[in-house]
Length: 594
Image (cartoon, rainbow, N blue to C red):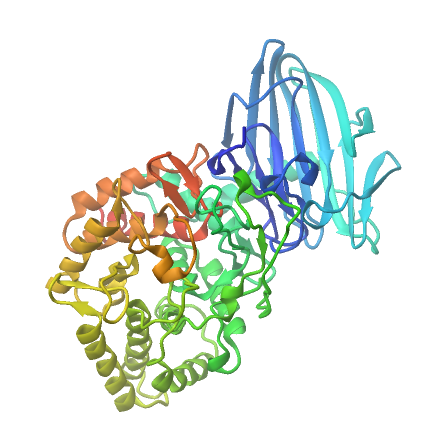
């Protein structure tokens, strides 16, 4: 039986991340970066595509598991007739030499434990050459090399193109495994002490979590979301990936399977707001600085997403040898949406830079020049149709959300000049543009018969992104058109109390067959909109339901199937966790306590 998406837990070192199943198997790991080729790809295939399982002999799913409080260190425990055993998983942080540390500890009795490691480089397609060197197992294939060692050393043998170990642990006894990657043309990096790494990781994560300023209801869920965002940060550059996975399906057996191991500009404002509000100024500044480097250049060349270091070319292709999660194909690498025009990202960038200025992030000399160049581009480009927020592949349209975010760009530029008259800029021209965009959206993007804004000009479809209209300041929360839009979205896009992204006939909008689950961040947006319009009790009830959707270790995917009761899409998803943090702060933070 194939596992569910929510059966996994995340570990990582802020350069890459692994997913660990409830059976003690690491089924996904890309080395050395989030966007590198996977050496464990069972998540999207089978055991022969690479995995590493450590578990009691004959045992299946664990008895219990949990992160150590306020850390990314995972404890998985089994109770067996012979006794109990724990496997502790972590990835200590160090430069350019990712390590996967797995510590086996006897808790009671005497338990026989089996380890099977199948390394398969290049997304499960290459079986490496494995040899023994100085008591280590060394796997090499092309540019990749990985070293496996155990402390104390345990019996190891090769079988069925895998490395097997079997040993017994009594109460208090420990065996630590360390798998270390490095480029095959370079010497092996210095060895890490697994027990010191465990101690330091726990201490470092707890010190980081202690900086969180939020102290309201569901603080554990907020801390877990912030830790997840930190874990999805590529520390060398400050970029935050949307998810550490590719091709986890939005519909089981469907084709809506995308690669999310990149950094989206759209996440910028929401991420900055969540980090700053929660007390993480340093991380917010690193993300802002990544953003500035990524968008450098001509505004007409602005992309919606970039690689971890700001790379622009992310070509999309398929891996036919992988059968997909729950037979959901194709498995895709790269993302062709990088070539789309999505005008809303200009508003996101302008808004995030304005937020950074208001939040006291360090001044950067070229920020205003970048913003002026964007406004010069938008002065004429804003009238174009685009692919919109949801990266549809059914053709360009005049998406209302895109136009609203163009208004945001102009509004933030006008406000900057009003607050800092010493800055150069076309105040009158930008004001006129802002007014023109606002007038056009209210005339062409609004359906007076239903009293709701629509997904695109002249359409009848709805879009959950319209819930952001009051948040960005386009209209006040008590405007009748905002209230009507909220009610129409709840009625048309609601599904068992949660929201789809847009109206049900997706093929009209995105050109793809099949369906998808409810989109979690949209449901958080609904809670925010309800709260902003004075319906805080309803907002908190919805927030409670959303928090309950987190898996047993507090993680959320991109989507949720309320009928089957399972998570869908790439996992864990930064957007979902940003939504959780933002809504908690809005409902119970300094402005929403009570």
